[in-house]
Image (cartoon, rainbow, N blue to C red; front, side, top):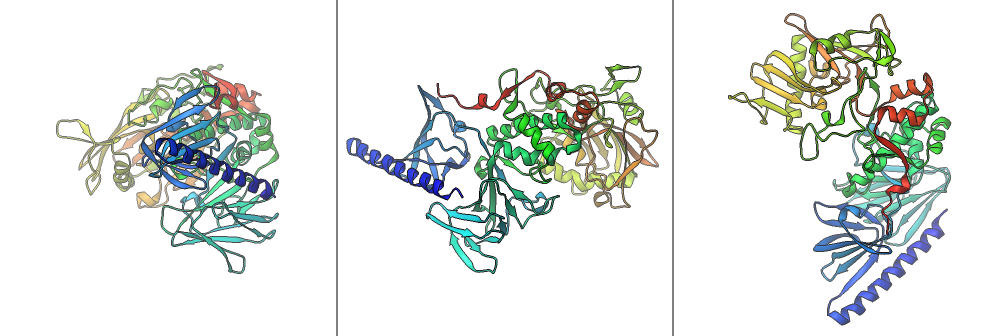
Length: 588
């Protein structure tokens, strides 16, 4: 157990805090003001509300004119962005109004751990009704604020619930062991894991490295669960959840580097800073601990330890990846908008459209087609004989047919919610022919009349789809909105099962089927409309199409024998491999 070491650190924090307090009071005698300073772990940061949460002092408001500096050999002016959740090298000065007036970052902020928000079963929500933990080595449950510790025997469960903003802790027979409004920690022996008994993943009840924090949620009578774990150990449980071991060591290493880079990108983005973690354990970040660790994926993480990708400007690569390319990749700026809504967004030189299909007349070359031609796009995705990097994927080619009524139903079932969720990109044509943002009529598009592609990206991915109905004409912008408006499932089409047909490269016919797939697999598709028979979509690939194709990495690593670095440069051109150490804030 690490209890003695932890208590020693806690005592040091208290002593240091006391020392700072004395310094502040002494200074107050000189300038008729009072302040205290605290050096504590930063647990959360809310830029919108202007607060920092400290581990022991709790949430404190930022003063109007607070100041942030980095202290090293010299003092540098910094901003709140540089104050990292999870950092333990931060000192804050608090005035007599209990407002933070100064923030000192004491040297470089290490990037050694990940803080992961653990979701409920099926990755449904971050808020838990109950949290149930156990460990074969036993658990230590600690309330740092109250300086209370108690132990749970090996193999026994401990249950956390909440009532009136307090955490209630009960043992296996339902006895209340403790109640507190404070954050609780669950530790186990190093080398052991903590099982979360109340959630299920593909592997059953998942077990985690590191330790847990249990807090009350902003949602009344709910709990949040955060797993803090070493960065490389975090990847032990990401890589097998994102890529199967049989893809081979070269692809797995490429996946490990991409996953490490992506995780650090989330860390630096402060995307979940107000919630107190860096990443979620779902596809909203990267899937974590859905599939158990295995020797091959752990080897891939260990043999690439600390390796990340940087762009030409020295910034961290936005390491997007996806399941399968249907023969072309997409440019990032033609898939996602900027934070301010600009679309297409800024060009990213290492995330650009490329052909991943072999030229049938010369396999040493990549096939190039006119990706802006609807005729060529349709013919390309109707052709099953093409081969390419992703030919071994069952998603290389797909098709799905809907009757006119089914098409009409699925559009009407989804267009209103997409417009509400993304109003700048689901537009209605007004009386002067301009597409504007406004609510969709209650009856949706009414009856389906026609649809056509208004814009495609450099890789042929659909960017804008215009749909004509009896209530008006509508433009659906961005691949996500398109795929979530036309959903090939009878939950939306209101008819019989909708069958999605799939084929690997070189097939003579479609061989695999899936019923009621929840969204269109990709935005790489063309379609044939027929007044009597409805529509058939012919497409390829699965996912957004930006960055590394995982099935493509599998082919490059096993069939062509590419090492992981060559796989990565195949998908992320104009980047370099570096060490995570370059990301530390340097105190010069």
